[in-house]
Each structure stands twice: as C-alpha cells, then as structure tokens.
Image 1 (cartoon, rainbow, N blue to C red):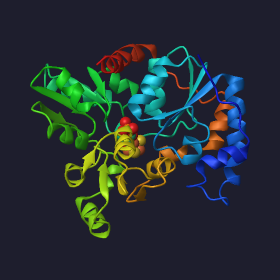
Image 2 (image 1 turned 135 degrees about the horizontal axis):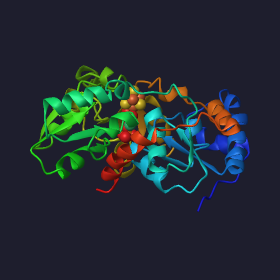
Image 3 (image 1 turned 120 degrees about the vertical axis):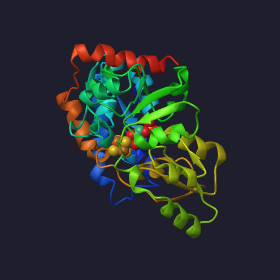
Image 4 (image 1 turned 45 degrees about the vertical axis):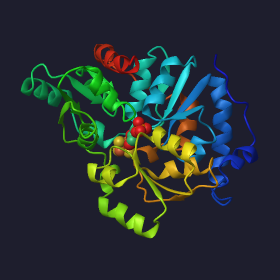
Length: 326
Ligand code: 13P
Ligand code: SF4
C-alpha cells in the first residue's frame, strides 16, 4: 500500500540536511520542499531518487532512494498512481517499462546520459551482424529502443552475474567500454565491448588516485565501475552506487573517498558524521538538471510524462525483466 510521509514543516526538513546545506542556502529550497510533500499526497505520487540527486531531493522529498537496480525494482512494485523519477531519462523509461499503467513523470526531459547517447538500435544491428549468435548484454543506461534489441539488461550491481548467467563463452556488452573491461577482468567469459563512456567517471585517472593517497594515506578509496580499469585497479573497492554506500555503512572507515558523482558523498555523509569524506568528485550535468522546483512543477502540471512506443516497450521490458528475475 502507498504510505506517504505526512507533510513536514520546513524546519523539520532542514534538520535532515543541516550537515550539508548551510542555513543561508536552505531558504531557496524550503517552500518547494513543503509544496512537494503536499502535492505527493494530493496526486498519490511517489518520488524515486537516484543516489546522485542533490541532498535536498534525496533527504527531504524522496520516498525511495537507491541505485539503478533498486529504482527499477521499486518502480515495478509501486502502487502509487504517479511515479516521479528524480534521475535521468533512462531511469524514467525503465520505471515506465516496469509499471506501464502508471503515470511516470520526468522533471526535465533533457536529463540524459552520455552512455545512453553513445549507441543506437542501428549500431546494435551492426554488432549482431558482425557477431552472429553472440548474446547482447545491455547496461541499463540505454534508451528503451536499444534495450528492445538486446537480450538482457544489467546494472553495475549485477553485471558479472548477468554475463555469467548466460552460460556462453562470449558476450557483447554495451555501451560502457569501461564497465565491460572491468567485468572482463573478473570473469572467464570473453567480452566484446562498445566504445561508450560516462562523461563523469571517465574524468578520473589513476594519477588522481595516487595524488589522493599521497594527500590522505589512510583514506579508503571506493570507485564506480564506470571508471577506467586503471582507476578501479588503484581503488580499494569498486561497486555500484548502492554497493559503495553499503561499504561505508558496514566498514565505517575513518576517511573515505567516493570516486564518483559529487552528491553521493553529501548524501552518505548525512548518515555517518563520524566518517570523513574526501571529495575527488565530478558533477553529472544531467542528474543536476533535476531540481526541487522542477519536481514541484511536474507534480503540479502532471508533466512531462514519459511514454514508450508499445512495439518497443514489450521487447525492452523482457530484457529488463530477464535481469530482475536472476
Ligand atoms: P548505479 O546503478 O550504480 O546507481 O549507477 C548509475 C549511474 O548512472 C552511474 O553513473
Ligand atoms: Fe550517465 Fe555518467 Fe551521468 Fe551516470 S553519471 S547518468 S552514467 S552521464
């Protein structure tokens, strides 16, 4: 059953983020945050927020927060009338695929992703022709149209498991070259990669990690597998955004560096005041298109709605469901 939080006064909301948002900054968010909590009840809506969303979204108005895998699962089981995706477009499309009878809203239609942009269905057709019979594992960071011509999806949390579940010696993994190479380093399955890159994670270099370790010798370094294999090799641990958060929660290192999008550290720091976060981070300009003001507008106007051509939706849903069933 849909159980929405009772609207809270701005002072209660501010207490949740006071470690990472200054009293000077908060007035810019307060009215929108209060309005969103009221609107969610009126619309019977939930907000799913990715771990890269800004703290005022993540801690003050989201009903569910998580990595791509968790958000896809939550979208599938939600009984809300309206799902607002505080994340990028492929995440909103995945929510619509998983729960097609719901109204799925994106606060900004332009919130894209460099990986999703890096490959088209025509490219996938060329790969199929070049490697007949080799299954295609598609990262969830792709359009529904690309998922529709793929065999199975994966996320950074389950990529190796998905690859090995196919029981074949060779797979094509699209579109993230670095994720594919990082999985290839962990499995005996041969992986044919595409040349897509995350414009955020490709910025980090092994030299950055060396400098970071010189400046903070006791810091534990956690990296996202969209980083290059050299960065992943230089880190202490690599995993999805949820895996990184889980690592901090379990091990409580005195000092940690999350080699990923900047908001992650702020969002996690709120829960672990005893952990010092060193911030070698980069902003995702697409994730940052989502703001409280745009979420409020989406709920007020019930737009922009995400729709998917049914001819694409059916095969794309199969690829995501096949992953979720593992
Ligand atoms: P996660 O699935 O780890 O949350 O990653 C999504 C993403 O876009 C990372 O850049
Ligand atoms: Fe896409 Fe990279 Fe932004 Fe994630 S961080 S949404 S992979 S551009």
